[in-house]
Length: 153
Image 1 (cartoon, rainbow, N blue to C red):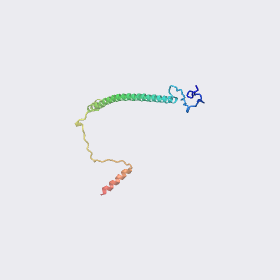
Image 2 (image 1 turned 30 degrees about the vertical axis):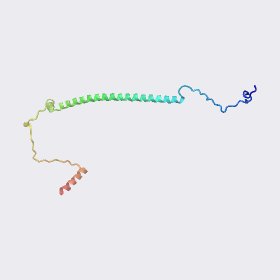
Image 3 (image 1 turned 120 degrees about the vertical axis):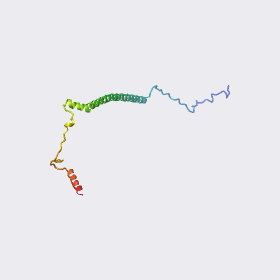
């Protein structure tokens, strides 16, 4: 069998290299879970959320305390207004004309003045007033000077 068609051994020389060897991608092991940098971010977000919740709870408790104080103050104000009204009524009752007359008669022993007890006094020397000797102030001197200037006209 010397046939050239079937004799492939003469064409085989050296093995031919492939034109381009295909590189297989290297397999990188992937760890399941969260990356290290993300853990710090998640912890920071959780801390901030907890701080926000605590701030809300604290502010709500302060609002409740202030509201309770306001209610207590309103109750006290109502009580004091009632006491004030009672005291005003008591003062009006004690300062009425009838109560004053009754106190004057019973406690002080006074009597009501009658017309026959009224006396009028007449002064024959006229109306006059005495002024003590004292030094005039600057304003009084200015007023006197002004009066003298206006009385000459």
